Image (tube, rainbow, N blue to C red; front, side, top):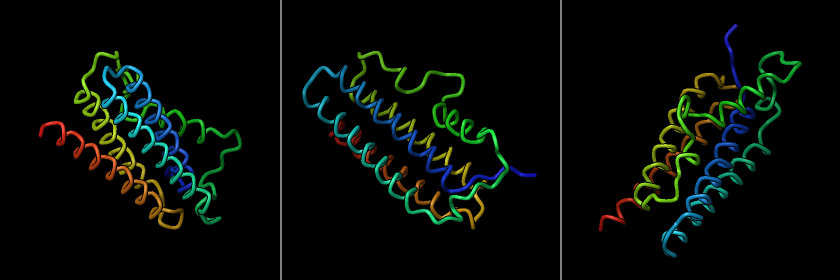
Length: 164
């Protein structure tokens, strides 16, 4: 029997990934050496928090079918697995982006770390998308992917503005 996920489970992952992003940017801001950099990083943390709110809102408004479990899971193993995946997405065998921070990074280095994390998120969600049947909310997962692509666009613009 193939493993499938529903949109509710995917949003659970998305919410954890956004929480991880908030934590990353706040830690980076704590280590920032100048006020402008610190402010930019706090704004990025706020953006991640806003995306978390968006995903929470989207999750609350899922249909019953989109929330229905797709496999028998009396011990809640799927949820535990998904939480583990969210914490380690794209970082298996290496430090998480937050743990990579030493406090000595330039804003450009921080944005590049963040950009790589966002790219990993998009790849991750594209992979999960195939496990969500259309009737279980695949279009909602595609909305999560669109939000993550917007993160990438924002980070690219920020990096480009540093080079001007």
